[in-house]
Amino acid sequence: MATCEAARTIFAVEGAYDVAQVCPNGHVATSMAQHAPEFQRAYCEQCGEATIVASPICKHPIRGAYWGGGVSFEAYVPPAFCPDCGNPFPWTKRRLEAARELALDADHLSGDEKQQLADSLDDLTRDTPRTQVAADRFKRLAAKAGIETGNALRAVLVDVMSEAAKKTLGL
Image 1 (tube, rainbow, N blue to C red):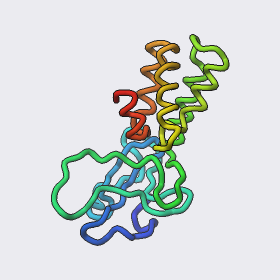
Image 2 (image 1 turned 30 degrees about the vertical axis):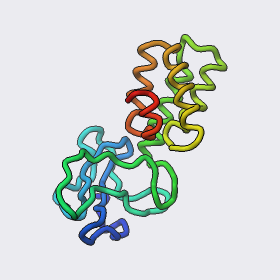
Image 3 (image 1 turned 135 degrees about the vertical axis):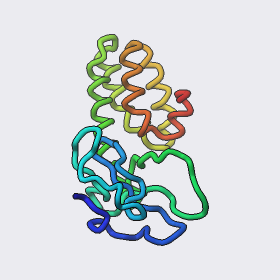
């Protein structure tokens, strides 16, 4: 089982973040793996994949729920990128790969448009100066691709899009 002992225990003090346990598809086993270890799961209950508690690249723990300073009722959403190494977590990579497949399979787009849409996807997940350009391009090309393709792209990406992209797209 991927336990918190396998990850560096740097979030164990009050007023800090706990460690999350997440599968490579982004399903959260627990956002409080240290403070509530009884909720840890070796495998995801939704897809059966092995869970992780640390970045596969730098091995730093996945930031979980904030612990201390009161109670929060916000639903935990795993981060798209590791704040320690900057690499996308597996669920971000998988969502981007799926969205690229959808973009490249869009029947109502020309070859150039499919490629433009696929190339703009990375910028939707990061808050950079290119995010606005990517969001505008996404909106235009997803609409041209058709309702089904546009909805599928939004559904795949919504959990890993930057806040700026979500705002531009009205999500």
